[in-house]
Amino acid sequence: MSNTDFVLAVEDLTVSFDGFKAIDALNLYVDRNELRVVIGPNGAGKTTLLDLICGKTRASQGSIKFRNEEMTRMPEYLRVRKGIGRKFQTPSIYENLSVFQNLEVSYPRGRGVFGALAFRCDTDVRDRVRTVGEEIGLVTQLDKEAGLLSHGQKQWLEIGMLLMQEPELLMLDEPIAGMSVREREVTAELLKRICQNRSMIVIEHDMAFVKQIAHKVTVMHQGKILAEGAMDDVQADPRVIDVYLGH
Ligand code: ADP
Ligand code: MG
Image 1 (tube, protein in one colour):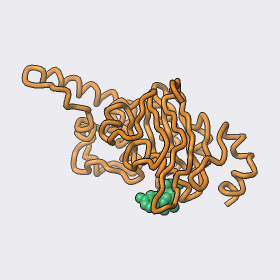
Image 2 (spheres, rainbow, N blue to C red):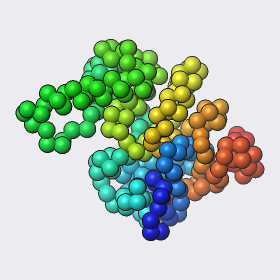
Image 3 (cartoon, protein in one colour):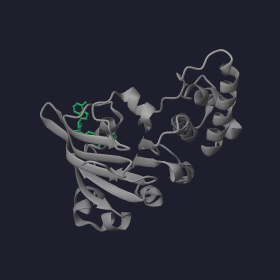
Image 4 (spheres, rainbow, N blue to C red):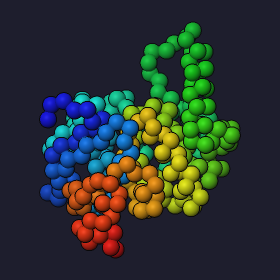
């Protein structure tokens, strides 16, 4: 493939762990401003796929293009800088810092700002923290110690920490695991809001939640794509019912 309008174009992607192909010649294309949900049984390779896209795991074969740029051999920190943000299943906030400080430390730095520029930079950071605080519904909790937040609020904070970097592609691995019904509803609204100016890949099992947020659904099985398309079509697909939804 030469040029692509897709934000993310994954082709022939393969990774072997001791000869076992956890991802097997997989193709995946994600549009600008698209919210894609990836579903599939445990062990299908969903988390491994995100590991490959963010650079935590190296591909054995194939290509990952982000905004038309080859990422496959690029180190993880550079992919972050290019605009790929990824949330892992286990939360990684600083429990003894405030919500504000958690967001503040996530602001991208290292752009050569010294001395006289520092004050202006502080203002920029504060503005950005407020904006993100509003986006994630925690603007009234900015001074609270993060460890005192509810489970759901901690997840939203971690999403906020990623938003501080303004990623163009945001990937979330099972973001509503352990959340209450109410927190799930709030999270669905949050994700719909934040995908308006970026692309997202969300791994999730809760079909009611998937239905609420997905533009398109990709079903994985044994490191491959089993089905892909609109939620209703995927749900009615006998192969999907057989390997996943029927259980
Ligand atoms: P899912 O997220 O869909 O449940 P995973 O991507 O976690 O699935 O795992 C896919 C398969 O790859 C599983 O069989 C898992 O045991 C295997 N796997 C994942 N990471 C590694 C690794 N680092 N080394 C060996 N096997 C792995
Ligand atoms: Mg997983």
